Image (tube, rainbow, N blue to C red; front, side):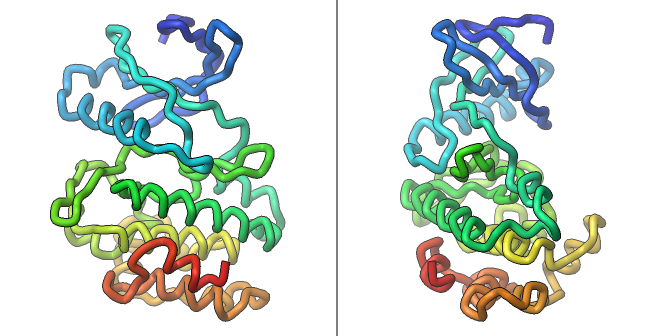
Length: 268
């Protein structure tokens, strides 16, 4: 992108690139900093992609929680489609864990991160939203320590009887077994599984299935039982390890039914 200004925002630099769009640090006329998510220009002639981009803006506009990235506005400035979000000064959880020896964040801080994530995901669920791409790189840790959920590009609104599939790719390392069988076969318990994977990594410094091969990780999610989290981190309580184990059950009906059940089982 050659332009340095879009609408009332001055672009200051790139924050990241994705399959659908690029994210820029930007400044408004009054000097406030924001993050601008801009749809890739070559995709604007694909109605299904534009619809997904607009869907993210619609979902974020409904949410108001201190641990969810705040929506500012959505606008079209031909040829750009733009979502404006609060700017988070920090790093994602994956990067943050790598600061510490063995990727282990101090326990009390890890608990705070887990509590904030559970609160935010439960709030979104109560608002009728499933995130569907829960992983450490979609959780930002602000400089002041606040955890902030990001990237609702795969999120969906749902009702009791209707579920919608966006057709987006899944993040294999954190994905529930049922979603490998049928991409649209999920509910909140699939998100519980993904968050369980995040918490396993958060409290042990590693994922239970150590492979980057998609066929191998798929087989592990479908067939392999993760070692107990307290086996990988003996200082972890049986209560926390047991709750994570329940979240990672292969059968959705054996997992927690919402994030507050998960929170109570963790003892947080």
